[in-house]
Amino acid sequence: MPELEIVRVPGLLAYDEGLALQQRLRADVVTGRSPGALVLCEHPSVYTAGRRTQPSDLPRDGSPVVEVDRGGRITWHGPGQLVAYPIVRLAQPLDVVAWVRDLEQVIIDVAADVGVTAERVDGRSGAWVPRPDRANHDKVGAIGLHVAEGVTSHGIAINCDNTLDAYAAIVPCGIADAGVTTLSRAAGRHVTVDEVAALVAPVVQAAFGGMHTGNRLAAVSQTTRPSRADGPDRPTSSDRSAGGEPRLQAGPDRTTHLQEVPA
Image 1: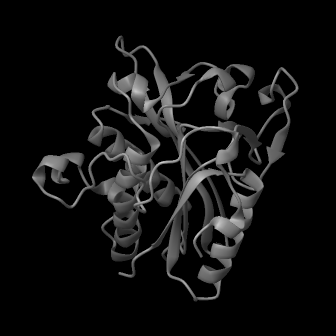
Image 2: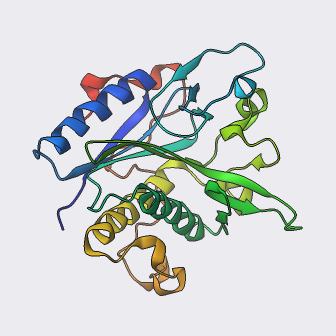
């Protein structure tokens, strides 16, 4: 199975330029020039609204919102949240729901690798951390996709060490009766975007390969997958990004423009 191109964008990638990068990579997949790519990045603080967003979901403080062509409703992206865009051709016969389940499993498996129990909730996409009393859940990873010509864009967002303040102004993903959390809060330690990015890349690659071989990631028990202690095949935490570049410090000068993104 061909390897996905891993595009680890340093700093903060302006959301509109992230869309342009996805479009460029998607065109390469549609035309057969590339087997697929995985963009790993952080965005400056931004609200994005999917096709199912309702007026009642929108920011109560009048903050601007970017309308996008993915599924789902409104969400937030920003520093401390890893966004992963797998730009891949889905296997035939086309099964978008199965790919959503695979991406949910990516989040669940990565959460387990940092010591967090996450799970699915019936009728709701994404990955959820159960509260101690099991009475409710908090969302730690969201999914929103667009599929055209059999090729996906958009993807998953995993809260790593971001603030949750921005969620207070919206109804996240249109779900009013549940909360949001981060891996850092759930793990009781600092879980960085770089640590999670290094873990996400090989699991998405496994999901991509499993989709085309019939061994779907979502159908594989977590207990059968190797843990970090089982060998070197899973990256460990580092203060460097998945691409090896030093982690850039937070600040307004971190925005990465497209001409700086590896081709």
